[in-house]
Length: 252
Image (cartoon, rainbow, N blue to C red):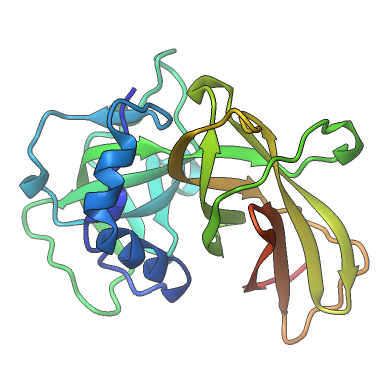
């Protein structure tokens, strides 16, 4: 287990909905170092290479290639990465892979970053595992809804609603968040980010992290505009309700 410091590196892609959040975190680097010393909330995989050995970094969804041709990564900007070392991402059971990662990638010999190119062969240098969950279908069973410190960013990519948040917690291993649908209104889906476990009046450790929630494939009552909808995410904040809105494709 180790802390993900993904925000200290300049992200190569241009997705403004989450790149702006990363840049804000870079400015907070020295403050963040004092907050995360000794804290462990994010699982990491590390090849042992130094941080200068990668060409770019970014969030990606792990999947299989065409007709099961092998492991591929689809970045949140729609770039396809084919790793030369897919076994690097194997989990402790030796057979399964994570759904989502923040990875550091080295281009293989002969590959060059180019505008408009949509696929690359890479070597994975290191990766942080991103927690993924389905939308909660039984919000009435959630007993707690603690306040978060800040809602730092949100974006939707590869079928996931992603949130970057800062929060206080008591025990790292007990932290849990949920997301559930509240209602629909024309082309807008209203959802709630629920801080379900780990908070409370005794929570004094602060941490920033990213969580990914699998978007429902069908949303009853939604009326897309030009094949797109708004997703409005709300959460309880220390000083009131925090909200973020993001536009995404919906082609059901």
